[in-house]
Length: 324
Image (cartoon, rainbow, N blue to C red; front, side, top):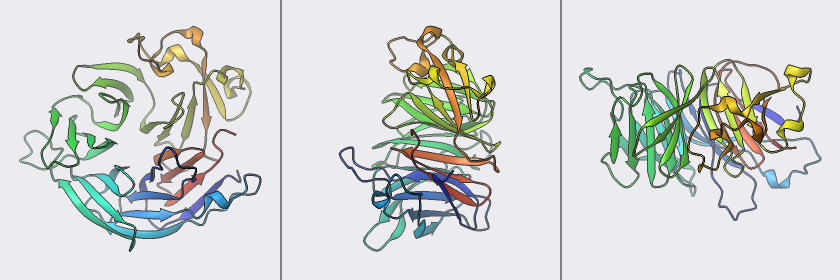
């Protein structure tokens, strides 16, 4: 596993995110943000991985993971997303959603916007419920929490755009955009749900306890999930997935599931394999990305051929060559 390197950082890492690069950029990912949890003082931090572009793909992977700056964060960092190349949105165990700005000229972080009690339990006299997940589609921000609420914000406004109270009877763990007005959520009992923010939810499937689910930004046939049991799975629904070995059939590191297991019948105009119930469209390959099982893998992010994840073993893992 020479393509994976680890950095001991002396704090439990709850979230990791690559800084987005312009679509026209040929530069490899070289900067990511991380958030911590369950420490005496939690932080949001910015890290550099060195010059990926200078690495020969045939050579061993050497990543000089270096801390650039950090800032204190009230409560556990329960989620973290880049809004753009300078602004970072965080979710807190206190129920707060914040926007931080990364000042690259002097490598510092500052808080620029906050929503103190975006999530709170009913009848708790304003005491916050943990905000467990956020997703950004600038300028919009969507948050979910243990209170079963979905919130929609705009980065340039201090007011909520929309709130869906009691959206889920279970705590929600993660959220991601499927389309501009559609999101996927994962709750505490493993249900993956699709939401049209203007209509009702549809339950697609039920899985193991997952912390996060992420579509690859440019390869929609690929999903990555991380779990409490220390696994980090790559779900491959591309057309050649059926031609690969399955560990259920004697291979190692992969498994196959019929794509029909991904849910009930949905609108077939949604051109994505994850919402198809047609078993004739191929099979799904699952690969564990981690070299071995570790403590809980709390967060992941993927950009191009590169993946970064944070764990409860107080380590950050960076991997390259995901598709080779």
